[in-house]
Image 1 (spheres, rainbow, N blue to C red):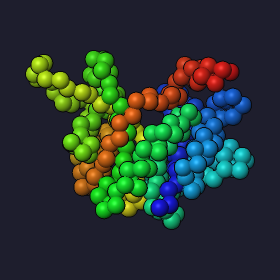
Image 2: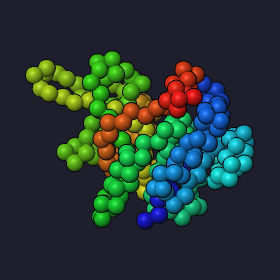
Image 3: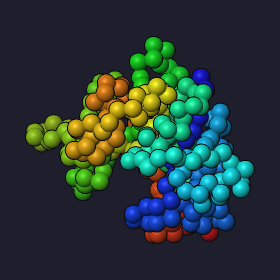
Length: 243
């Protein structure tokens, strides 16, 4: 199986414009993420996929592989699908460009899903992490996921799912982490399908995969990503590196 990593990288970000080019230990955030993905040794190839000439130059000047997006895209899956269409691979792993401290263990678990899936019944694998705080559970910015007994995703929602009607019943809540591993064909099928009704309502791209019949295996992790969404997050990342 050929497994590649794709790192979608937009320059503009509403909460923190240009965050991927901010300095983190002498390198940009996106370059540090790219090198971290390479250093896992999990992938045949690692690419940054961007709409920005600034990011393209930063990665290519460092000897990295970078692809330019030809179109505007609504989500990371679309950006990756356009880039991977003419690349020969079996599995594509989406690595978040604003998470330079890559969780190698979780990525390995995602890849293992496909290594064990001898009948090719799984189209995507993604991560979930248990949440217990009431605010986190009720926060619509946290996408929740429910699964069946085999950890196949049933549904994703910004609402509280499941609804805890009976307080005597022990219920666990899981947040979806937007890290995916895809079979290439699932990614292309997603790309060729217009936004679906439930996806449009919830603004969750994982739902489109479900609405077109793709099977998503969820893998539980206990690692919360150190993402850089705000200037405060960048300062935390610097402290994490002891800078």
